[in-house]
Length: 474
Image (spheres, rainbow, N blue to C red):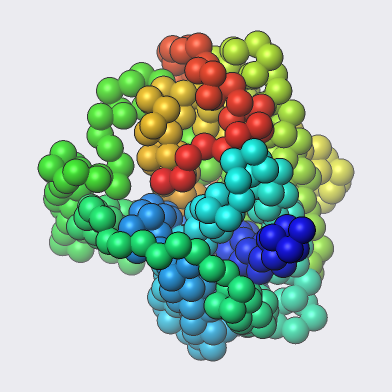
């Protein structure tokens, strides 16, 4: 009885940590317009999201492995401390580039929190009870995803955008105190090397490529020395990453996985669906703020139907996949749904009924939830069971990259389509073009889904798809 009471007590700080780390992926969505105006640099504001996604994508893999090696309690404390320091720096930032750098630092800590929280539950709870506790704690990210845009907008309206970062501090400090005093785990000794070099070079490759895609064609021409130099740096770093991953014993992304048609297509589709999700999540609130004059909280509330659609589809399709053992048709169907939603959003005007947007976003959410659930199961099922954790880490890595790239590329599309004009007609045209650019991504996804092979689910994957078991940590 005492053990169960202690576990319930520990669930509170773990759920708080998971809530604020997930929240910070979406909480800025409705506040980007306000942040851009306040700091006088609206053109680079999407980097506030992108910087967090890049660093958190890499440290998700590294901190998970460090937790396995030197202790999950220590790494959870380190991750949370970095996250809270980054939150403080974000809230104190007085210019755009300082805020972006602070968000990148915050992402270093944020990346490890979700993985480490779930792993700690696995350490504390016997296998027979694990799914119940992990199911409970797994609800937290869903709540945070739905609440994030609205909560960010509400805080911005009532206080200021600085407080969407400051709010993490009291919650995180309470969680940190609980973890320090009440969490007791077995001490571990360092075993094996962590692929730090692989993480470093892929971070440089991603950041330089994104920087060039963001500034090329505006701050400098594509044929300029800056543009060519950044492209060359990205190419060299990518080549170095591939070389490193072939040599190290514990690669951050095992390249052997990509010999599988199913796994390769799953990673690409995860990249594409994440990219489209961030397009809808970031640019819908911007549309309502810039063109319709909505407050940040009202604008943030408009993307709630998207998140509800994601949760509904993700929750319901696990049973379908388990019962039928079939999943190939789902990414085809999901790509079509997202494409339909993109066409609907591409028809937005200055006075489009808000219910039209609600329906379009819900349809998009259903497609994205279906795609996320399916490619996760397909990608995990494509590798031997003992490597499912590493496969999950690689899939989530590509998911974060998709969000990073779409934030930058679609911001450039919007800027070019409006010619940086704030006139209503130009803005309406710009948002229409931006949403319609989702169509080529879904065309690629649709074609890939047709060519994806279908492998029967293993017994372990049937349980994971049904929610009766968790994938191993990575």
